[in-house]
Structures are given as structure tokens and as C-alpha cells.
Image (cartoon, rainbow, N blue to C red; front, side):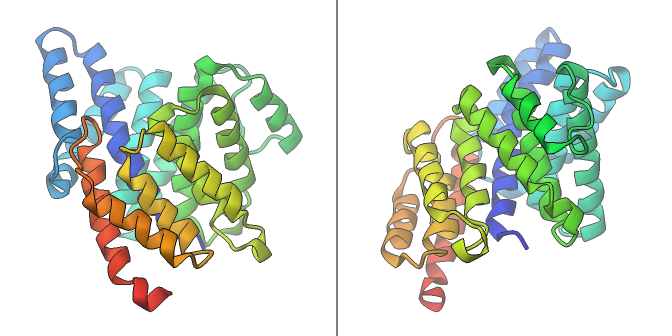
Length: 290
């Protein structure tokens, strides 16, 4: 039911989560290990080898599980563990039952994190929607990162449960959550919150409730916030918006810019490498699509 680009968004979230998880671990594993984990985070994010990251990341899933065994109510650990499990499943796990298990686990951890850290933050998926909106209005900028962890994890969970109407019905809550984060701190994850909102608004054509022009504004803002360096934003702009409205000129221009760009940007090299692979595939299928 959801666009394939929502899965691409999960892959981006996984790569960005690595930059959050590894330094977070280093604050717990002190001394010489701290410098090692910080350097390792940089090495992963600046790598152009997606397969190497795919094969090595499960070790960090186990590491986080081990840390949580000792601190099961630590909101910071819960949130980073949630994002890493969710995004890894979205990016790399093809087997449906295993992917659902990982996303279920991730969403439980993200909800637990918010429940522990933010007042009245429990059972957000079940409270009356008006109460939920009022709760969001009361949130402060200091809550933005934790809320973004919940929102991105929730989006991944909906993707893998897209055949379940009860899961799809929660889209309105996730959109409201992400829209509040934009108001609190739109710079999170190189404008990643705008990426998600751009995807949400272009999941469907206007006749089915989609708002592609609103989605376009979010994609353009994400590009602006990343100073044109986050190449995946342009790929998703092309795939979700340009294809939806059949704008071949915009589609090809965005993808050509991605393919021609230098992917080597500190902290974004791996994400940009993935974006270029996707851009080439979209260009190859453009004649068939348009």
C-alpha cells in the first residue's frame, strides 16, 4: 500500500541512526573505547560499501541489546535501539515474518522511551486523537529528538504492516507527530523530518487524499536544510513526487544531479552512495514509466 520510497526512507534512517547509536554507546563505554567508537561511527558513515555495513551492523544490534539488559528503562538507549532495529529491518531484512518481528520490537522500544522520558507519553497509539494533538502541542524543543525516534520507527512499522488496516489507520498520528517536530526542530537528521512528511503527502494521488504539492514543499525544504548535500532527498523527490505528477523534466533533472554529484560528504557518504545506486535504477526505468 505504501510507496517503495518509504522503505528507502527507512534505509536512510538506518544509516543516520548509526551516527546516533555509536556515539551514544561511547558515552557509556568510557575511556579508550570512547574514541574507538566515535572513529568507527565516522568510518561507517563515510564508507561507500553498503554490503560491508549490512554484514557488520548486526553486531551493534546485539551490543545495544546487551546495554539495554543492564538499563532497560534508559530512554536514550531505547530510542536509538528502536531506530537502529527498525531501519536495519527496513533496509536489509527481506523475510516478512522476521522483518515484522524486528519492527514490532523497535516500536515497543520507541514507545517505552517516550513513556519513560516525556510526561503523559504512554499509550499514544490508543488515546483519543484530540488528546494526542493536545499532548503534541505541549511538547518542547528538548523533546524533538525523542519524538523523531518514535515517528521514524512508527513509519517503518506501518510499512511492514501495510496490509493491516489498523496499522494504516495510525498514519494520521504519525503525520501529526512529524509536523510537530518540524515546528520544534526541523533540522534533525539533515532535514529528515521533511523527508518523511514529503513521502507521506505523496503516498497517494490527490483523488485518494494525497497532497503532492505540499509534499513538494517538504522535499524542497529538506534539500535546502541539507545544503544540497543529502542526495537521497532528491531521489525521493523524483520517485515520489515527480513520478506521481508525471513531471519527466523534474524527475530526470533531479536524478541527473544526484548521479553527477560527488557522494563524499562527511557523515553522508554511505547514504549518498545508496542514493546514486537508486537514482541510476530510476533513470533506467524512466522511459517505461513515463
